[in-house]
Length: 50
Image 1: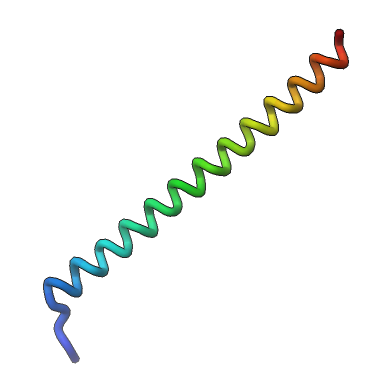
Image 2 (image 1 turned 180 degrees about the vertical axis):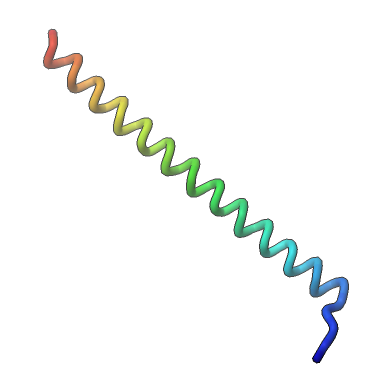
């Protein structure tokens, strides 16, 4: 069994951090998309009312 070197450990931690960052960015894109959809629906609804 090979021991993990400090460099291996740092690389693994960096990859894990990058995955977490990607998840956060994807969540933000999803929220922005929902917000844009809601804004468009509101705009359509208010146009119908006037």
